[in-house]
Length: 224
Image (cartoon, rainbow, N blue to C red):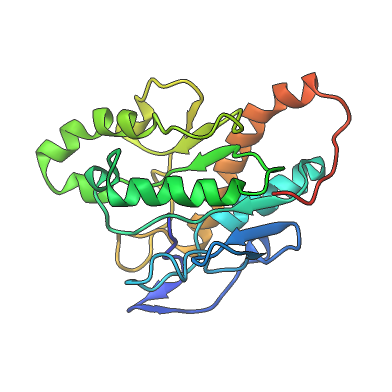
C-alpha cells in the first residue's frame, strides 16, 4: 500500500503517470501531521526504511475527482508500512495506534470526515501456513477500528482470497490477481498501481452513490 511502483534495486525511477499527478484538491497529511498538497511518493516520510514509489492513493483520488467534483477536497492520510504482518497491526499495537493517532489528527479542527480506509496487505502472511490460516480472523478483528463518532459512512477497500471472504459490514473487496508485477515478482508495477487505484475508486463511488442520492446539492468545502 505504501507503493513500490517504479522502484527497482531500491531506486525509484521518478516516472509519474498523468492519473497520479498532484492536484490542488488532493491533500496529504505528512509525518509532522501537517496538511500539504499531495504528490508521489505518498509514503516517502512514513515508510522510511524502504524506497517508496507509486502507490494506488493518488490514482484513487484523481479518478474520484474526475467522476465526482462535488466531493470537494480529498485528504489522504498515509499510514502503511511495507513488509509487515497482519499481527503487527493488531488492536493496541504500535502500528494500530499510529493509524488511530493520524486519523484523529486528520479530524482535528472539525469539518472533515473519514470516508474510507484503503487496505492492501497480506504477502507477509503467506510465508507461514499458520499465518495464512489465521489471516481472515485477524483481518476481521482489525476492521473493527474505533473512531470518533464524528466519522460516518466509513468503508474499507481491500484485496484477495481471505479478504474476499470477509463478512464485515461496509467492506468492499477488489481483486488484484493478475495485475502486472515489478521485476522482483512481488510488488505491483506503476501501471498496476494505477489499475488498483481505479478499482478502489470505482468501489468507493458505488458505496457513496446511494448517499449522494439522499443528499441535497453538493456543498463545496475546503475541509478534506
